[in-house]
Image (tube, rainbow over all chains, first blue to last red; front, side, top):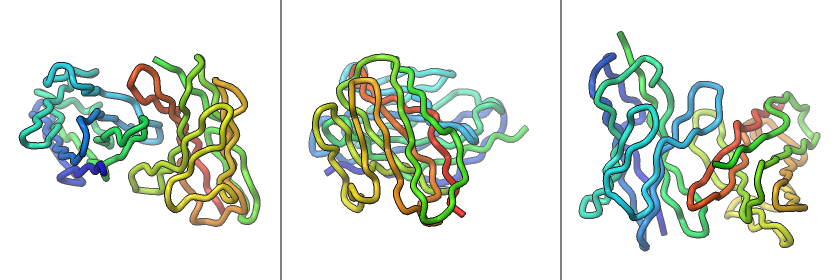
Length: 112
Length: 112
């Protein structure tokens, strides 16, 4: 069975600082991993995905994530936070047949 | 990437009534999914809808409460039946396209 753990339900950073959102997964098969972002009062937007190609995945809006099999991690990073990055971020693993299993989410706050 | 439209985007419903949410995709897709996001929570898969077959429901969700139709490869509906305040949620349609899961903007339902 697959599962996802996002460490830290709330993360606060200063504008211009590094963003690091943590995601650990459990999967009995090679996983497909995703990060989605949900802006206030909006649906989910795909940030990036890992599907067994390059372990460092670049996404939209300057985000990237690195797949580390030995650590079962898929942490999301961005070198310099912008105020517009404030949102809820969800890590998800494909649970077979393209069904997604989501983590609990991390709310990112960016302050001046 | 697939473009997904959902209707209604928002609604306020009376308890005991039923509401049907529509999901339209701009391309033919084999698999469509319905997720629920309760207030302040992560996403949970309700069911998988494949054209030409009965929907497959996840544990805790039943067809009588959440009947689903999938008449063709670009359209699906989810009905939330006999609604109670606990059904107040965002309901999201999603599709699989080239190993990636895309989401609609969601239907925000409030049951009063």
